Image (cartoon, rainbow, N blue to C red; front, side, top):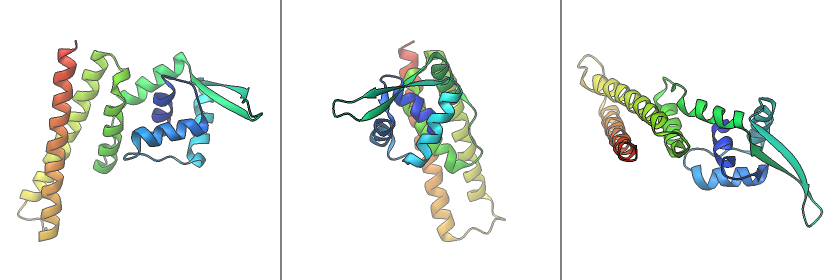
Length: 174
């Protein structure tokens, strides 16, 4: 997910590694907080894949800064990452789906439609799984588990409502 965030952040403007980290924290702090130890290898991987380029510039204070710029390959990679399949892990799904939905403004209306459908479909699957566990009289769920399952069902229901709102907005803008 870090590559997706890096590409999205530098889509609109070139940044240094420090500025990339700050933009990610500002925009996605509830979903991701990459360290420099994670960011530097991600930048290297993206550069090796020709998704971004770097250029060195001397600042007014005499400090050497490296600026990163997205390439055409990088834009294609960003779209690929946004549209790739989701994990089967419900916790990873929610986090990744939130990030992808937050970055979906760089997609075409058709691509947004695909993303929204994918998110909604997977959220519905997880909601049904939680309902099945909750309603299975043979499962030995205790009071606390039932409370957490009920909350999970509500969370997925709310998430589906959000995606349906995004779908309607996207349809209006088509």
